[in-house]
View 1 (spheres, rainbow, N blue to C red):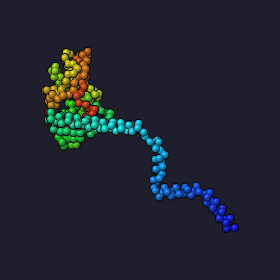
View 2 (cartoon, helix red, strand yellow):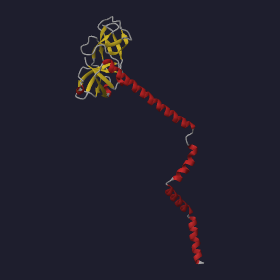
View 3 (cartoon, rainbow, N blue to C red):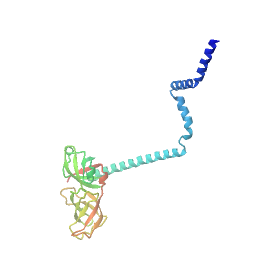
View 4 (cartoon, rainbow, N blue to C red):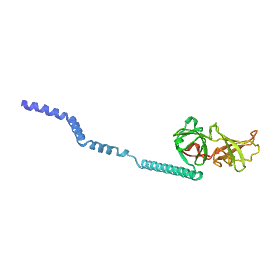
Length: 245
């Protein structure tokens, strides 16, 4: 009788501890199955909250936008490369150089090239980008060159307006558009006129395209001046070509 009394409380204690036995069994199962059962249960419970058709459509739209952006970038790169090839063929440029640096505080003043005197660059050479002239080489090292842009406030360049056969002085002002000053009062220059290097230039190759007259101030004294939109995008150029007189 005493042995039975002892076994009954022990059995009762074991039955009362069933939650702990169940927890131990679950943990053992998780360990043996490496959590597969838990993941299945989680997936079953969260299925009502999975993304529906609207989320799928958003994902497809995002993928289409990404593909369109990549295609536009490829087209832009191809157009830039075609421009460089055309520039090389049209101008007979002998040296191509990458733009490796430009100062944020002097965006319209100068840029640095990844070629130098070892590649034949020298001070005074004309610097061309797809579209036209953007500046001249100011100084060189064996492996780099510094370009003074036409938009630099120190830039002064004699230019030519072919339609009216007028010379002028192109002056930079650290802005995207330099100004064109004339000596004569009646120039006949109007918006849309092309500006080039002088056909009589001894410093630069003649007849290089520079830009287009954007506006003319006829009231300025003693002579009018004009705002010139450069034909080459200085703010976006990453490769240039160089030619000497």
